[in-house]
Image (cartoon, rainbow, N blue to C red; front, side, top):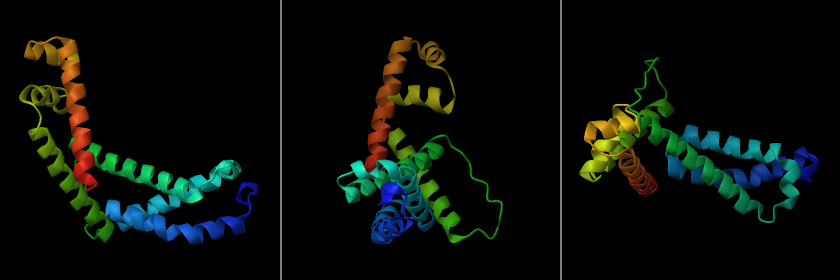
Amino acid sequence: MLSRGNGDAFTQLYTVHRNKIYTEAIRLTKSPFLAEEIVQEVFLRMWLKRAEMSDIENLEGFLHTVAKNLIFDQLKKIAYSAALGNKLEVVNNNSNLADTDFLLRHHECQVIISEAIGKLHPQQKMVYQLVKKDGLSHEAAAQELGLSRLTVKKHMANSLKFLRGYLTQRLLS
């Protein structure tokens, strides 16, 4: 019925599955604000793709997968902004709890990323610093270190692979 645009069917699905998705999102993000955003996005996507919903055999599994992907996307965004060293500006001195929680998580992510960078092989660490922190191209970093561009590219690929694995392990444990 949902595939035909039945609002009552959608409301029933929302009522049945909302709390499961919210619980999983808050467990992983530790943010009520992000958890609610994820719930809304899951059901928005479900509604927008309602015509295709009749092909889905395991709706609960589908919703769980969409929610997990959105949660991981949020965690990646937080980690990415921390990796770039973005500074958050607090415009309102009376920021709410969600903003405070986000700032704490952002700081925690920065600490974890610094930890991960510290565990890189020394040459990988130098290449990562030059490319990501100093903004050099692979070619410029290669010249600076006296290495080939392909070696720098390989070091960057290995560094990023290690950092992704480390962050995934630390952020989801």
